[in-house]
Length: 278
Image (cartoon, rainbow, N blue to C red; front, top):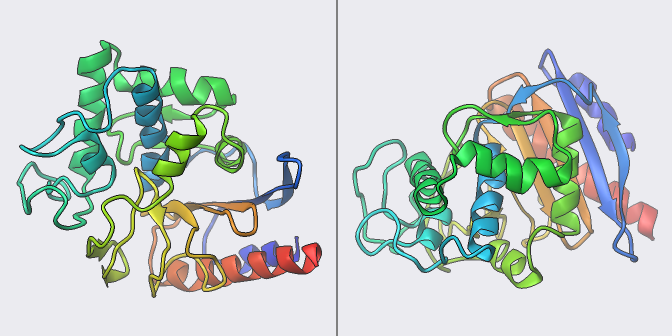
């Protein structure tokens, strides 16, 4: 894919990027990639996508329900997944009542991990490996620490996960649809790195693009685009409107360079896919 040639101009030492598409039959195929497929990168907050998927699988397995209490008083599993529990970013301080505002919280995902462990009797890292990494063949992925930010993985593995997001088989269609649709609509909040967004749309673990501007995806990405980016210089988005996903891994921390380069790449990827489909 021609759009990927610009990755070579990024001011990073190492980068690995891939584009996947889903065809009309539902099959997923790689459309192009650059960089080492097996190099390990710290995912930072892209870890939340994988952890959220494990939590949603736990819901389907009957470990607990989305509406079960978890976190601060009045908060549920769904509130924690959607960053509306009221917990602060990295502390147990309660900043708002549940559902009132989108407060991006690493602590909330730590609580989710503890909730899985208490309800299932299985360490969260083991549950994640058994529920997500194993079934998808993600042999180069591992959680060492917080469910919010401590997964390391490879381009090869993240493309396997992106393929799952394009054609889900580990989650029921209704669960997947709920996870990738706006939860607690209308909640405003700060999108890390991009400032206040009103509304600051989020699903159950997945950030929803909606009408956010500025944003780390492109202006050509549809409002239904969902995914996450990480402070370590990583991202994964899926755009249902074009049936495509893009995975980006680098070893340079997110900053102005990424806020400029990633939207441009995303726009060019979407444009290239639309030209090919025309």
